[in-house]
Length: 171
Length: 171
Image 1 (cartoon, rainbow over the protein chains, first blue to last red):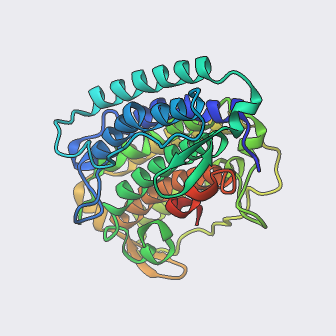
Image 2: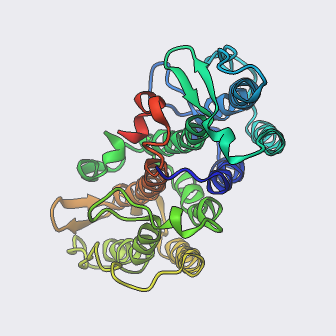
């Protein structure tokens, strides 16, 4: 196990600025490309991250750290961000604000190391610890950064010609 | 085909700052983790990108755009960065400088749209166009950003507990 609270925060706090550096100023040809069918473009990924700040991470953490042990997590709809108006810089700004609020709240409600072993009830997995949830929050950020780099790369999957054979991101 | 020169430049010019935003200030526990065995950590990935600026992209582009048609590409050793001293912020600064130099050189030597169809000889693929090489340069940047997010995520592959089943980046 590698989770350390301070190191997890160091990753969580930088994601909005990393996304801004990667995406802000790109033309819509880059921002609106996706992996085909119902897959998400970069705008939709950022919108999803905002919804997770509002409805997923902190509500679940609060559920774990409330006075009632082993509560069911509040519901989260992972498609709730779709079909809304999306302008990149306002999405990025909103994500940055929401993430800052989340981390301020987190620092207020986590009181001691033993809190990381407290549990809540995930609708599918059953009992999970705060440690597992915070680790998942970090990996979820990295998953969506990973997804955006893949989505952007695939825009050039034919343009690279024979190099496609060596670029595993295009497979 | 989607390649557009200006749009490709927009991605290439932002990679050093994206990497800086993602990595600078992280402790060595994050920077030195890898995917096991001989796989690269984040420091080694940045060092590799510097070597590509020095020995791969611009030398190959110059080879294509030289007066002699269909030249063999100059050799490139993709492991040449390993085993050297590595300090993150100096690597990031070096990469940023080299990338700026590369893009200045590129803008000097690309003269007209028809240049994108000029060819050089890749040691394995044979004839490739400048268009394919520039597209590959973009995808190569995104590949290594993708790799770094995956390497960081895998540090928590056990810490996430049952969520591992849903986090495809960990597989």
